Image (cartoon, rainbow, N blue to C red; front, side, top):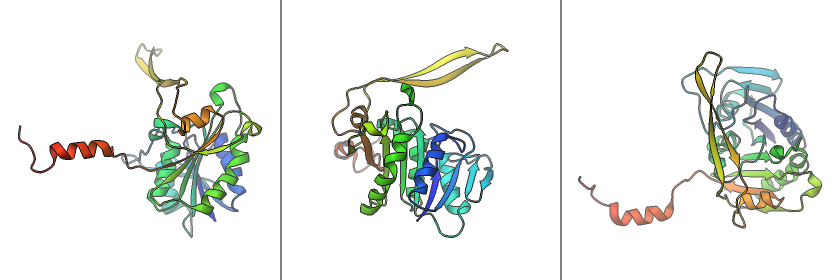
Length: 257
């Protein structure tokens, strides 16, 4: 099996090194194509107005100046020589990608771009860092077995798998749960205004995550309960209930003002 790795934390991230160790337990044909710098929150952005430069670090290890989506697109079409990858693994992200955050995640986007190009994609994220945790032990212990099992059973072409590993050591994990995407009821976004040494204003944008009360069966609930969450995701964002309702009032000839 030929595996392509990417991430959004950058080519030098500890999580990517952890992912390389995970992939080495699955195959001896592993390629890396990751951003040169951190591109967290890049979602599915493509670099369309600037050139993308590729740097080689080893026989099968590359970085690009682009986004995670750029890396997967170039990795599959240009960087990986010979046969196309059989699998793309994206991560291991420093911090979880849960609930509506998946729409902003460059880690998830890497797996989505693989799916769009006809290659199975899996996103992997490790929680606990905002609670003082260090390292990716939980993901490293359990990801190889979960990935193997997922590949055995398979999943539809238009779907990716989003894996989130809970905070704490691997000895604390007692369960894997297949979940659905949840939604936060407490998520504070912030923009802090500062002034540089020349008197010009600038902003640092960030957010503070607060514990919510998610429903059972969601990715958030599983993470709060110390479980490994496995969520099948797809990119059909259509709200079916609204489609049905609007067809009754807006279908047919276009209305005139």
